[in-house]
Amino acid sequence: MKKRSEILNLETSAIIEAIRAGSEKILFQIYESYRDEFLSWATRYHQVTTEEAKDVFQEAIVALYKNVKTGKANTLESTIKTYLFGIGKNIILNAIKRKGIEEKAYESFNPLHDNGINEHYDHEHLINLVKRLYRAMGSPCKDILQMYYEKGYDLESVASHVGYKNANVAKKKKYECLKSLEDRINISKLKNILN
Amino acid sequence: MEESEIIDKYLRGELDAEQMESFSKSLESDITLQKKVSLRKLVIAGINQSYAEELKSKLVDFDHSLENKKTFKWSWRMAAVFAVLIVAGAAFYFTVQSPNPLDFDIDEPGLPNSMGTDTEVALNNAMSVFKASDYESSSKAFGKLLTENPKNDTLLYFSGLCDFRSGNPKLAIQKWNQVKEPSIYFIKTEYRLAIAYWSIGDETTAVELLRKVEKVENSALREKSAEALKVLD
Image 1 (cartoon, rainbow over the protein chains, first blue to last red):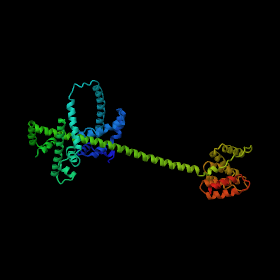
Image 2: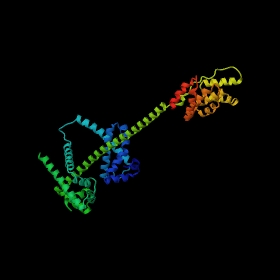
Image 3: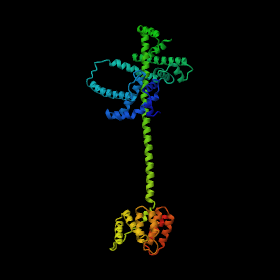
Image 4: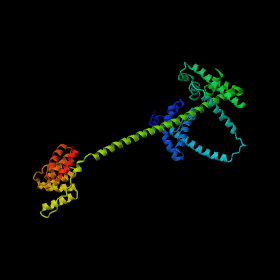
């Protein structure tokens, strides 16, 4: 694994590019490079425990990944470290705020007012359903769908990673896997409605 | 292009302008297509979230491995520290346990002060400093007197003793070797010479001298020599 100094030598744009290309390795390198500093900083200045700080830093890394994938972190003006610490700080502050809101909400909870909770709950419920069915798929469907929809690989790259002859074979297999997953989701949704 | 493929390309932004316009128009009016796009978005969101959770879980495992690595490193450091302590302890033990020639240095009360000539005053002064255990200063004082009386056995003996006790055994040996019989200091000097040779690592000469002293009848140093010989043998 690269040493911290080597990570620091990389341009932010190069790191972003590596993350976008689906490199998990670079995320672990970043994690190792800034972990201890973040833990000291978070426990010292934000009064969180070491375990909480670890959780926050892991969330920050995941957020960095998501933001790069969705194009929100395409051109960072700050360094990766500053960006991560910024995300970490926001996570901590939001958690504190949320805790306050939750306490207030609990005090003034009125079960007669919906406030769109059900809609949110439905969406969350559906996402959880997809996750459950997707995770149950197994190899190679799970890998193919992850490569295509998560890592953003094109079909040729998928074929080469899975060991298929060409992109057409990968395309056909991807279609079968996707159809199978969507059919299962539809059946489960139908079951829920009927129940 | 199949519909499923078009939906993917639409969501990935891979349709050209013409395809995009055509698909957007269909999407506005076709409820079934809208549902299919929504379902695909849901699938992608589920896969994305699933991966984010997987990544988080991998980071948790990675963190444990880092902690273990640190603990392992720490254990190695501890082991290294223990090893050093054991070696140092053993070295200390053997240093303490191994016979030290200086342990066989015998007491020397010095000579009583006497009133008399300037030389005797100077000798008294040197002897007083010697009795105060200031061997460096007394060595200088005896040395000064020795330049005036280079063969004086008292001065040779005491001057040598000051040298020995201030860490100059070779200089002491040089002086003590000049103390000959029938000097009253001869036996004592032979014994001291043995200890001095021992202290510079010449155990053979030390043993020879000690054996000689051991054989001297009515000498208080016989027992001490035997003890030293036991250690050296």
